[in-house]
Length: 492
Image (cartoon, rainbow, N blue to C red; front, side, top):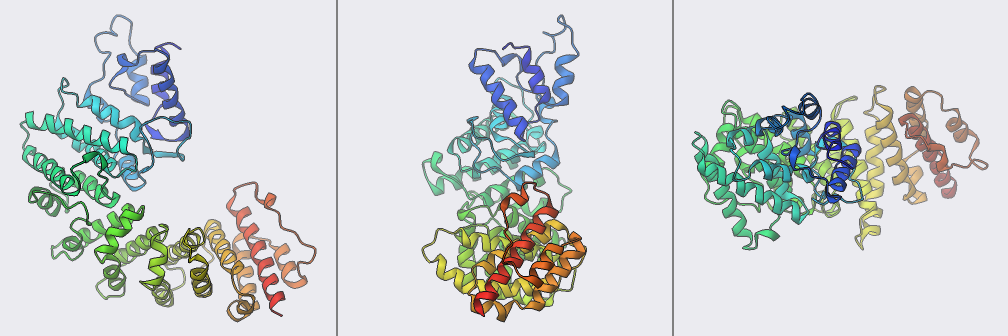
């Protein structure tokens, strides 16, 4: 292990959560623990910029421009990757580079690398242009880290915010007052929750709102500039226990009211990650407002789609799914929507994902009343899936068909045998086979099963060693056919 290897590793690194990048970061940590100095490469460049910086220089010139400047580092942050990171933020990622790898996410930045880097960039001895830090999206990533489940990540984010505030006080920029007021208001909101800052964890919906607000407040020409600028500059303490500005933006009377509404709906969709996010939405009666608004004449098509996507995000939360079924009547609400859809409507795909996610969440729920809940909703869910089938078009992808077949199979497997023929008839089964044939091609084995029975037929999970969508869809079609035959035979 030598320091000459470090530039090579940084050249192959992209600061993301891809599997290769996580392994490279682990290697860099091993080098550092082995006594190899990484200080000469700080602040770290990565990717092509690192290759260009570290490779094309002679030994004599090396000492003159060895250290990259702050501008070079912040320019490596791309708007697309920042947007992806905020949308799919790794809430359980720790600062420690552990043996267990995070799920592969090549377009998501790694907070375990970026937070220490931001801390170095904002060190008191460095001359930092604060406007470059927030306009590059670095501040947005830091604010998103405040919603992390890992205490060390939140503490590191607070540390970076403190250093950013230090440089703000010494700056002379025109937007200095706005950002000083913002950080003071954020600090006031945190102190209202608890005096022990280390234990404070704002719901990710709040952290995401603040992160996206910091991006738009940097751009006076953006339609969201005025409402977000007012929110940041007029509050002495931010309320971190509610969805910020929901009513003001959702019911905006501004000429750009749709932009305002879509912004807050996108925050709800992308920020709905876990129990805390659902609870503050439930407490603020947001679901009642959204479910009622969907059926109103003033709801535009994009708002309707966003509301469905919010429901999809919500039903993935174990604590949310049973409550949405029992208290909000989500299945009856979906039934009304399905009846109004036209074949091939773009909302069909989202509703399919809602039903699939809802069923998976209910099945895997640790609740003691799970069995009663499943028996109550299984029949209704099966009827919804069969109604939804009439809205499909042949343009459907094999992946979506696989999701549909797998969900119908799972619901059917928990159905009472006596109810199967009442809800899913032979006509339904043949229609599903014919539709699947249009997408998957030959399905003779399933057709033979339906006509000649399954007495000597055995399905093995080894049939799906390949994760190909066509293979998985055919496998689930066979499982569904056998399960339907089994239920109908027992009910005879």
